[in-house]
Amino acid sequence: MWASGGGSILSSTIHRLLLALLLFALTPTSALAEWRRAESEHFVVYSDGSERSLREYTAKLERFDALLSSHFGGARTEARRLPVYLVGDGRALRVAVPGLPPGIAGYYSSSDTDVFAVLVRGESDDILLHEYSHHVMARAGDVPYPGWFREGFAEYFATATVTERGEASFGLPGAGRLQALQRNSWLPMDAVLRATSPLDIAGETGRSMYYAQSWALTHWLLADTARIRNLSAYVSAVNGGRDPVEVWQEVFAMTPDQLSAALRSHVRGRLSYAKLDMPPISPTITVATLSPAAEAVLLPMVNARSWNPEAVDGPALLATLRAAAVRFPDDPMAQVAVARAEMRWGDAAAAETALTRALDRQPDNVEGVVLMADLAMERAAEATDEAERVRQRDLARDFIDRGLAADATDYMVHAAEGRFRRYRY
Image 1 (cartoon, rainbow, N blue to C red):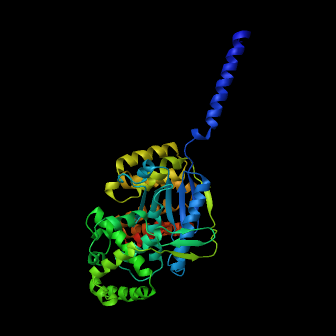
Image 2 (cartoon, rainbow, N blue to C red; image 1 turned 180 degrees about the horizontal axis):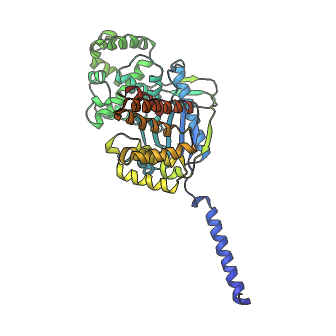
Image 3 (cartoon, rainbow, N blue to C red; image 1 turned 90 degrees about the horizontal axis):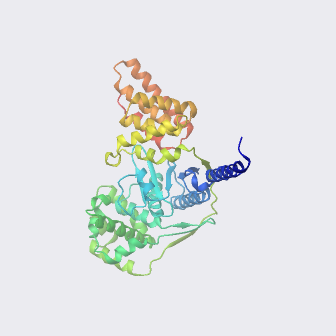
């Protein structure tokens, strides 16, 4: 029993200490970042920022999709949603994509296994709008376009704005592109016309000018209805195998040097931009809070999907995700993440165990069933017994069907279906 004097002082001190600890534990700033996932018709957006900003950003992307779809008459050949990861700073960006040069605030990747974008919140939105323009152009199922028009079109829409009321503007140059056109040496226009992509142009400055001049050429073309009509004839001839420069001179009656002079004059003049009134856009957006495991595994999981060996430190990533799986043994996201790492750098049996655990708790986890399908495809390819080969192939097909039933808009399950068709069993 406490003595009367000292006991009251001590108990009061303990009470204040416990109250302080309780308040500290309940303070929002003491908690780990809370990740959320927003789903809309064309996007899945992850963010550890506020729910309000997540909804606003997702709505902005849907309004941009509506603008591009209106340009293409609403044509769609497939329903694939684009995953977008919004992070707080460059450090978090480089957890998902290590090795990015300084000053980079956004990254887009498209491969046979994954398509996604990672962006620092509030920065480099034009990167995503540029790349999503490529998505929509391809989704329209139109004829192939020259490299300069593909990039010029994406640059043309990268600065677009669309309000909730449907008031759209687009076609203004990015400040950096316009500055490059005004200050830097231009590439010869025959090189721009013949290049199939920016990779055909040597040097970082050269590639930057390719983007800028492609924007200028596209802007010049779209500013005149007669030029737009001529573009159709030009594209048809080039797709028929003819030399792009020769066709340009024939269709537009201009040499590359004359074209360069016309574009320089166009850029120095009063640049116009397009405005469009569309119906009000109120996209349906659902937001869910992810489990605490997301803080530990979501961005490393993006890195684990990369098939660029230079972008992944496999052993380190495997160790990170193994530790997370131990911390969150009942969390499907953590188990799927470690399974992917085990399949690439560790043990296939451990991967299957983790996937089984994940799918027991979340049977419709698309990435989980896709990885199970990949395991079955590998076993089918390695099987020497015909009955076992057929069994594993059928198992892979069943897992892919589960993925399609769970979410037919997920790129990963369609990529797995493509691998299934290409496998030689």
